Image 1 (cartoon, rainbow, N blue to C red):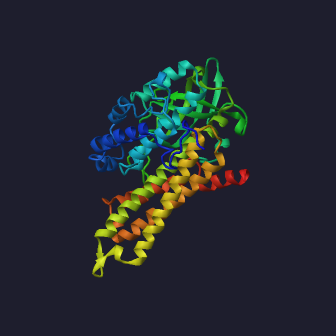
Image 2: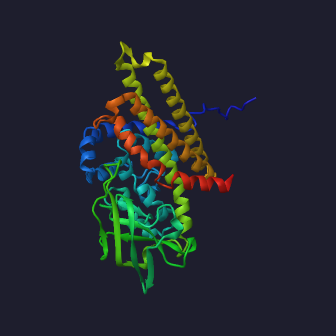
Length: 387
């Protein structure tokens, strides 16, 4: 017999509490009021106003999972999922990625940094006063993290940094870069993390990179030419940065799963609405079995992928290592999103290829998801070593 103090929750309910639901409603209201009326303009402009960081920061949305003493709310993983999902509901993966760049730039400082570093490099970002970016990818190699070429040579109480980074989300406007550098020999054991401020002499940003999708996020190549960076900006121990990168990837990949699932969900919803109102050969598209079955397959794939992602998130939230599983989930979610966005455009026909239709943007934005945070092929290599 079950004790009075124990409770059985429905599988879906175990993920999101009433507090999560309240956060979701607040986030949804904000997106509806502040973002949706402007998103088309921001997409075409290739960026959203910097002031939006401050608005989101003032409401506490930037720091939902970060410590309260630094200006956050000390929430759990599902708080961050809620915020990500609702930002994605703007229909712009670029906006979600831009506002969310702190989610990959700040964790190394949170987990490995000193209190002084947290005060200087975390608090202002959570408040929306500064923009933080992560600098790992280099022109000569994307997923080959252990082969980073940017060097940082100790010179008294400074490091002299030389090299370049590319495909950096929020890189154009970032005030600080959590940057992977080589302080030791070749391979993974010679990598460290330095926070480099954008006003450092020798730090320069190339022209805004033009992308297939994610238009509303500014993406940059950053050049570091004899930048003198204070040694006190070293995050954690010297030559231990590779392990921090690997830890950081787990959460980044989880959020990419979420982005893929919401992208697929929105594409499904748009396809269902269109199929119900569009007529061909004298009847609605939903009157054709081939369309109904296509929608059923899409809905099934989205449901399975979302549940898989949430389950892994719950295990990570409980402190369980999920490196293999999150790699599987990323590949699965991206594969589902690939198929669902493709089929949504197919259902729309020629209109699905036209700018101004949400499915067209979802189709474009989707393509980066199986590349960012580690490609599909890298995920398979990770999984192969763990099964």
